[in-house]
Length: 161
Image 1 (tube, rainbow, N blue to C red):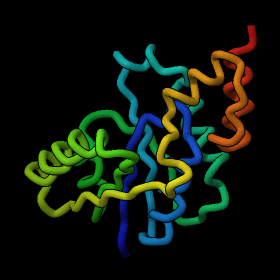
Image 2 (cartoon, rainbow, N blue to C red; image 1 turned 90 degrees about the horizontal axis):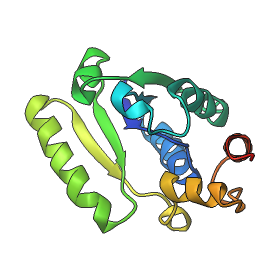
Image 3 (cartoon, rainbow, N blue to C red; image 1 turned 60 degrees about the vertical axis):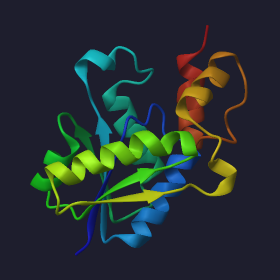
């Protein structure tokens, strides 16, 4: 059985994330979405860890080989404990590559048996980021083309004035 973990803050999950998730579910027998939780940084997120997990579960309920967990601590340690074969990372642009490459090498040094797989979202999602989506929502713009419906609704509730 091939198992992979896809970590991220998912604050909030976007159509770009969902594209990578759906394609990774076809490549692996089991995919675990690991929602990053850091108590110090949690105050900086728009959605709480529980809200982010719930939005991912709603968005991905049709994917039967997927589960969503909370991640605190080192990713490679969690991946090793859960017997993962690979870490899935999304790359939108060259600007993402330098950081992701460095992290992949560090993870390989700490846990050589776990591979890092880089996946690019489809072209129509490469410009989407959670940060930009939140800014559009904050300013009253329409985010429906960029996020699943439940996320658009949750953003609208967050920014009601």
